[in-house]
Image (cartoon, rainbow, N blue to C red; front, side, top):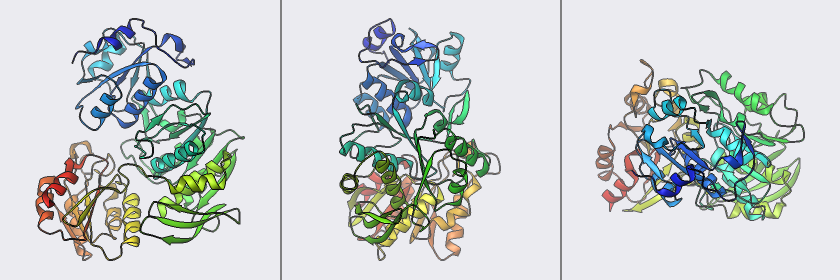
Length: 494
């Protein structure tokens, strides 16, 4: 691919407009005009690239296997992308390279930039230096709920006229994109506990200068970089220790592990959750076919009666987290109430992909057993009489390992029928630690659950089209594309 002349020219010294002035890596920001993203097709990398382009920088990058939806997104943003890695992509040299955390030594472009001493930086460090400094940083963390809570809070601030900036690892439907560079003083960030780069194995959220922090839940995950829950808890304790005494920590005290990591906080701590011990809690919860009504209690008094167009206890906690922060930032109860009612969720969070033959097909990003269990429980509560088919693709660095082999059995208890695909890239799991899809199907079968191991997506579609009936619901669980099963299934049913 020939890179368009504009970005190449900018690397030779073309002037970028509206560039924010901030020190970075000993360089002056006004000298940085052309930024290259190595592994640009990651969700966060692509969003940051688009955000920096919106700020006035010339941005381009490369990745392997450039395909929709990220290729389409980057094209829409006017960001050129090389498909594949080649040292020639770095000629002429950009002013700065952002190195994605999927890149390791041996990558030909990485080796080239190291040989030529081209300045480079990790994604979280780039986000801190270009976007966070000078703003009030609100960092949403936790094993679960980060994306939804971040999107909720960003929408509350937007509706209140605060014009927030944000970077979210999903696509909030209210905005249609996972980033915004706003004129307001707040920046809302989804704070991931995953590592930063091959040269920086610390959690991303430790780079985000939090003025306000949120912790929704803490469980074991990311088995490729953490060996125990204690290691993850240590990362969260370090995060808590970054919040200034004038800041705020909103924490879900429904979970003992969250309580523990907050114990030595120097800032104000506001607890939230469903338990009565929380400073902010929900009660008098009423299910509807569109979502949930609930009374929100703040420190013993009714704050508001609100409606959230979301299902499940996990989304009640997500909403409470956003409300605690919004209240702290000065939003009124009416503003919070109105923005909650108009929240349009996030793509791939129990997203209806279509209906055919009387069968609804949903897509969900859930892959951790807790996330799967909570999503199915919330849907079952609303639809007690519908037959739910759950389709699971073990695809993450953790779920392709046998760590959650037993926990996955409980995760699917609210499904009537379960289909489990082959493990994606089992070679990425340590020898002897590969998750067994066959074993999960067998274990569920022993509990009198209809469960089947079906290796390929096409075989799943063929299996389902002969068995699905009007009124059935299909929910897929994967952090990836799942082989395009949603459209394939809808086509087969049509």
